[in-house]
Length: 272
DNA sequence: TACCAGGGCCTTT
DNA sequence: AAAGGCCATGGT
Image (cartoon, rainbow, N blue to C red; front, side, top):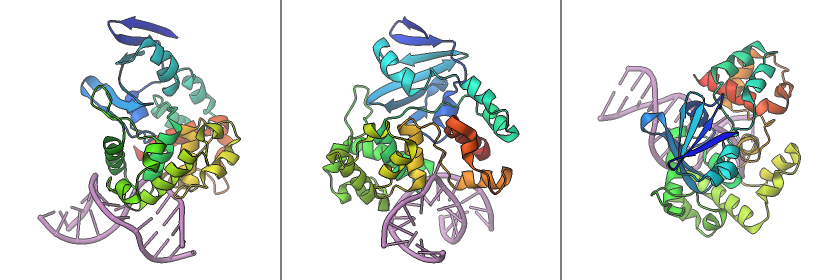
């Protein structure tokens, strides 16, 4: 990877298939927002960051070269050849079309705890409100970062709160689910890092032991927070896609080891 | 298997 | 401006 450091910013050249807009607005992540000059600003992995793409060059503001190498390349999944994956989907006309439409999407390797908590909040909810609740959670219970933003609160911090304190974020009936997740992660009853080492279905069963985590939320956590790129979340949108374009007995497992990436292309395409 | 659980967005009127 | 449907659901 071609990494240059220039007056406090990092530039990585020759990155194909990276659109910040598609990546941050396809519903996998709730803490990045578009700023001026089409850059994206947000907090992840406990750090604030600003990103900008010009052609095939990615500029990273506010990060050290060490953090780029250790954190951000992995977070943005920059080492994976998405062009090759898109071509591998050419056996399916509809998927291939969707993939070309969303060819700048990358599946972020997000923090496992933040992903679990965020997708519990996402249930039966819309994106603007999900973002608002997460923002409130971070401002209230996260840690203040040098640039004035707040980190995502740790499981142990949330485990120390009452249900009504979590409810101050206006998350409604989800407060008890967030608290259960925080307590199970904080106590070690669930070890999210260990789940990355299991097989997908065993990890899914572990996640579903948490209140408020059903198949859909578990699938999202597997895909966005635990690195299982074969995980294929099926929500109302995806049901619609499957009904519309695929036979009744169709199983998304035919999409293979990158079925989760296929899911994102189909989701992004269908939502328009 | 229905129905219920915040609340706010968003479209329609 | 007011109404009502809807929302990347899961629990009971």
